[in-house]
Amino acid sequence: MLAGLPQPLALIEVGASAGLCLYPDRYRYRYDGRPEFGDAQSPVTLDCATSGPVPFPARLPEVVRRAGIDLNPLDVHDEDDVRWLEALVWPEQTHRLERLRGAVQVARAEPPALVRGDLNEAVRELVALVPEGVTPVVFHSAVLSYLPPEAVERFTETMRTLPGHWISNEAPAVLPAVGRRLPPARVPDDRTLFALALDEQPLALTGPHGQSLDWLGDQY
Image (cartoon, rainbow, N blue to C red; front, side, top):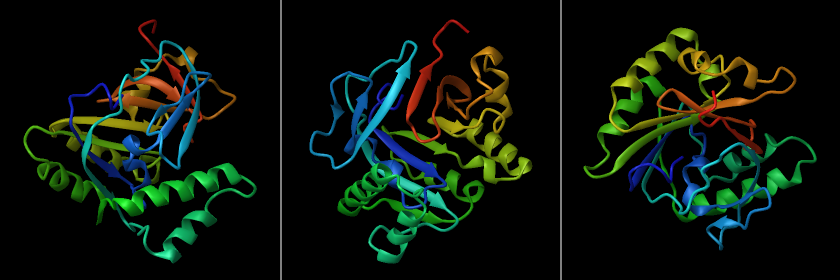
């Protein structure tokens, strides 16, 4: 999705924590049995099972600015902060722990600009700092469910007025405008999936940790 937007990009993540999701151009990807794609030197490889007409990227996105907002941003150079992130990985999921440590290594080489604050207060200011000729992209994953409905509604209204694009990856019920556009028959009852949307238009259903991608296509 990022690779298909007008380049270059300024990424702004809300609920960024340590900002490890701000480096899509620094990671390597493995979709099903397709050849690996991305940064061949990256210490991070992300595996994803896919279905549907996925528009596999022909190139990595060109990211020229990385910024994030969090109530309590974490510093990848602070060992206590990194240990806290490691403690949040579920027991025995060593593959996730290895990915986390690789992502910390990437972020330490090029630390993101993280802002402490409420997303509704800070997002407009960060978008305003994006230079001319660069596409602002505000994104988030599994964040808005922690906000009360009125705060989600306020954030939605703000995003509709800002330049650039808005990518959300949340449970279908979190953003009502996205949920209403999803075909009910495509949303399973037996497992948790998120709705990946571009400017409130759902494009895919995703596994909460990026492990799966079901592209919806034009059929719905």
